[in-house]
Image 1 (cartoon, one colour):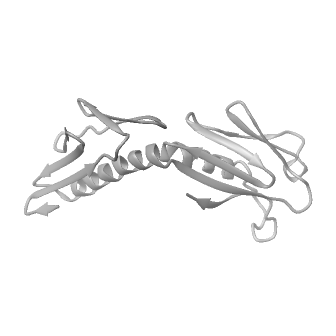
Image 2 (cartoon, rainbow, N blue to C red):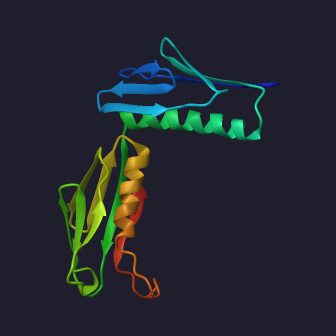
Image 3 (cartoon, one colour):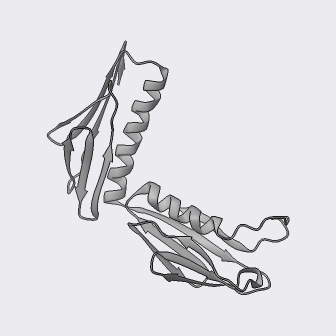
Length: 178
């Protein structure tokens, strides 16, 4: 809601989630886990009133308007992650050399990519679960940034340099975001 010189957002917590505010650190807990984030800014005020998180900014300049909208989106993503979670589907594509993809500890190991002798690895960030079934890799998590970064790490591990991507299509590609 915007009134001349005032921007205010109200975000209601769904049932099953609890929030606490310690200074500028907002912590939201749910049945799927806990997410915390620091929202430090000298002019943006965050408050917790019963089951509502309120963001307030008086007399904003252009960058502060953008920042309070970003804070609003981050809080909504935290709530969505704790209620529904985030999921990415990636497809394994190869034409000549069959790839073997497996999860070992906190790494996704890609063996025999383009016939290479040494395996490639992609870092799995904490809080993300990765599973491989056939030619589909699934990344699940409650933190949108960690889940998206893990999917990007997997996709980036199979980048081919110096060849036309339209012809040499081998790799692992993000096909769906849920």
